[in-house]
Length: 114
Length: 110
Image 1: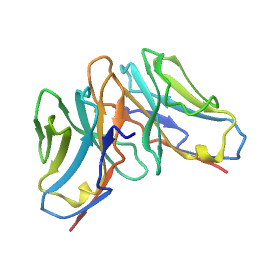
Image 2 (image 1 turned 45 degrees about the horizontal axis):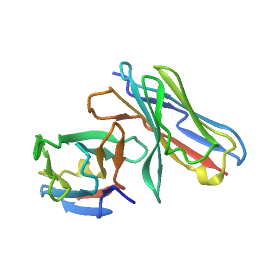
Image 3 (image 1 turned 30 degrees about the horizontal axis):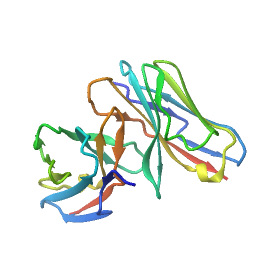
């Protein structure tokens, strides 16, 4: 079975550029999560969607960050403009809602802003 | 303020012995707890979970214990194998999202 697919795996770009991270959740999953992992803060939730609707975006650090889920099989996380402190590994995860079930993670996008 | 804490950043164990990873939480509303394992350059992989109505859940070499009164859970790996070397994350669920600890790096030496 295909797991959560994230692209790109690595992204290196210059400060000020727009960055778009992509995620395809597991088929049949209706809940999708975006996380950011850094050494200082660990794994922190940025935003999550249930049935394509954003439920909690309180973890989104600034207005420079935005996320969309136009359909059940695709989500994007956009940073515009990007800054060096945005450098981190970004993970997408999905699960079935509403029963408590484990989230399944993609392999992440390692983002470096120069 | 951290709601889920893993106070040991690292743990080293001999192959064949028991590994015990610990996790503390502060929110009594959490009702579902999970352990994830993470290898470098990969995403976290679900390992085992436990509901707050239970105090123990076992799956092969992995057992999770939950002590609600102490707000503490632990993961036991017996026997430990070199392939178990990874970072282990504890997570707790409240209203749909997960709160993660910062992880414990386990090294199992042959």
